[in-house]
Length: 507
Image (cartoon, rainbow, N blue to C red):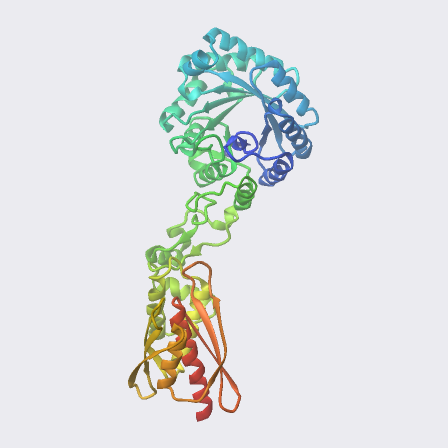
């Protein structure tokens, strides 16, 4: 059995410190319930001394969690902070106090204005005091990533001897390189007596974009707990993202001799929940939970994924609650992706017909960033209408504007394959187009309905026009047309309605 890596979630504490991401108590409870569904080991619920709201959040989450997770409260190395945390955790079944002090030269001399001896003394005092309230005490050595190796050993040895059950070695500023951070964790393991009896926790920030790599280097070198947040939410550039480290461990569990007990199928749900509550959305290319994490638009990639998912996906999207792989149809998509999507929509075509649809698809894809299912259905319907058409559109050109007179030039191919071109004016561009069509297709009709609707979303959506015309005997014939240009859609719809009228007469 591989060693268990505990997942310590600090979305409700460090994550909430991200500018603009603050949550009220009720919102924190909603997120806490999701964290319990994720089966995290520790929930850092807040910093009780900081505000009455944070105190209440810790208290209620402590009651909510029961035996399902350890509930942790943050403090400074100050007795009144620890008193407040102990009070907030009074009803927790598995309480933990998280206390500590800065250990880097910058923190010791510039921030705290203390000596190294005073820091060690304060560290011992805060751990010993917290142990009077709870058995589980975690000590954080703030800015350990920039601390002196031997002084860090001295501090950690002191708190282990004082009864700390977890030692947190934060790279508070995201300064370290993964290799160096891993060496720091190993140095502690090799030089602190009794450290094998406590959990070594890693808390890494993403200032240089390496939070996940730093955390994994820590695990590789003996860390047994990772502190992280949903979506990597946190101070400045954020924290280690839970979804990233958990899936990295799952992918490389044997190599790392590690596993977690997290329910990964909740990741996408948790990500969207936190985004919704905080208003901080993840970028589309975010690992694991981003909209594009399992999306493929390159024709080469689509072909590979359709043949065997693992060719371009190392994670089954269902494992993280993302459903299925997404084949995004764009101008870079190939025949295989188009055929696959059409089959999913219930359409199957022989190669020659598929090639024609593919040409129409590329023409549309060049105009749009993405081609949706509704677009494909419109393309297929257009092909079917064109195949049954007596008259077909060769070209449509309009000139319109203020104070210009709307003019349309239309070329249609008749049932004998002969092209006819007419140029007319109208009160508007569509009126001009319809008049041109009437001069070519000479059949009595009266326009009874003209309607337009968007086939898909966005400014580049296809516009589908429905035209109904009344024949001389009063019967109504409807035609539809779809195109990215509403004038062309209108022309197609009108010609299709007249084709149906003519076909009915012939029959």
